[in-house]
Amino acid sequence: MYDVSFAELLSRYAADKNLRPKSVSTYVGVVRIFRKFLGGQEYPSMVSRETVIAWRTSILKGAGREEGITESSWNNYARHLKALYTYGIKHGLVATAVNPFADVSVRQPRIPKKSLKPFEIRYAREVLDVCRRFESSYDECSKIHPAWFWRVVMETFFHTGIRLNQLLHIEAGDINLKKRVFRASAIGSKTHSETTLPIPDELYPFMYELVVAAHSCGFKRKDQLFNVNRFSHRHKRDTMDTWQVERFFTALSSLSGCRITPHRFRHFLGTSLMESPERNLHVVQNILTHGDVRTTLGYVHPDVEAMRRALNARPEL
Figure 1 (cartoon, helix red, strand yellow):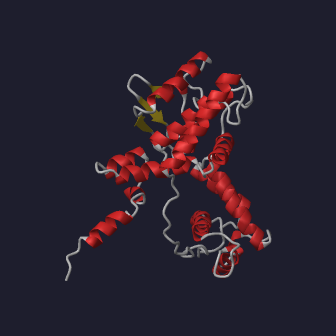
Figure 2: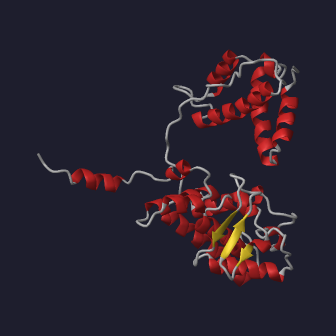
Figure 3: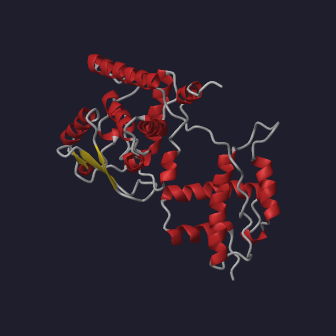
């Protein structure tokens, strides 16, 4: 049996599991936070359950202590470190038989997923329309540039609920305008599964505009389709990344006066589909590419007015 350091344990785990770079970064961040609490000297085998509980107490937000992390964040930390220890113990890399992160999760409050309201989406569209008219009239860059491209990005999130990482991995050859479908590759999928999604009628004109612009710029089939750097003189990177998309949504949120993110579009779509009279749980699950139908059920929120009608309909005694 070996007794490796946190760094070696993480390195071996990442290589063995063939983790994606983004997943590795998450593990690195969690381990760094834990080692900071430990003082940076301890080996994994030196950590006891009591140490883990003490760490949880020190960082978890509680009564009378506003600073700290939420229950959800703690459970995320514990889940990652438990996986590391499980792997290390199984392969004889950690000189202990007991996983100190076993059964240390806490119950977290069930809070409705943060979504968007219809008027917030209208505001965002109006902002982008103004920016586009400005660029067209004055031949200058607006605060959101190029406005036409970012409108396509926003409408794609709105109409498909696709994850940000999946959108960044769409290639020019993944779009089939004739069949009105596109391929969401497994590379950017959280569930590691490739999916073919429809292009809704209202999204089609925006997707058509993007594909025509890409063709004019000489895109090849394997080129990243949603790449602002190919359509703008202001942006100079080779590929579009998460940071550029987040900067766009930060600017859009500021100009529209409401918090807008790609994931809130996803929640808005899931909620609206599950609230429609024709809702089909498995269809919604496929659209959102959920691996577990229970995740899709999380988008079913209580309808206060429906509850009011049910209570008012009770027969009087």
